[in-house]
Length: 240
Image 1 (cartoon, rainbow, N blue to C red):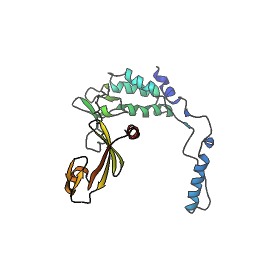
Image 2: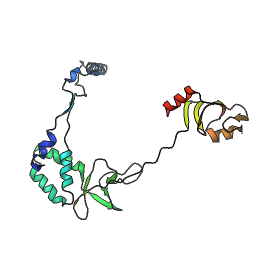
Image 3: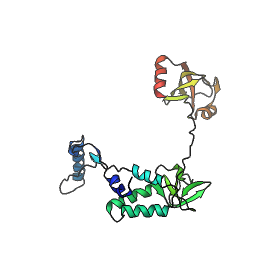
Image 4: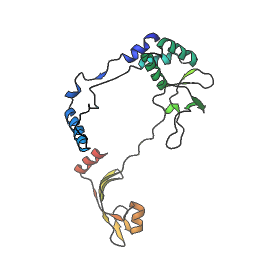
């Protein structure tokens, strides 16, 4: 791929969407009427209409060639790669500057290596106080090595997802739930604990208010317990 045509390839991709007027989109007139009503209620001298924010067409840059070009330059000094791009793209033009702007979304220049992984110096830390690694970034795919100055690929760390624990309890209402016990689904009905001691059908023992709070978090007890019917099992499968 020629670097001289890179700016044309990126910006000349056809726009996405439908080839129809925005006025023909469903809800267009209704949205304008709502805006006009709000303007009138705000005390303006005369109603006005504003163009809808939804458009039938949108811009769609073709960034695949830029990504492939950077991939072919991995291992080369970044200063040389950037100089060639600036010479061929001419960042003083609008098309060239447009490609350069996309370039910074792929390449991170200010990098610090920690335990063999690249970390950005500019991006803010996560809300939990952890410093973000470029390996966890979805946009940045390349970085400039802080010591060698070479263009490198961001390593992708394979993180195994913890298996989701099976759901053995499904809330129906505030006082009813489906619960799986020894691979059998039951429908449990709870009631408010109004006596000092009551028999709990789940725990199979007498409980008081203290025990109820420790077990269920409320002053309730399992008053009824019955095995689910076919209709109940169908609902359980839908709710899982």
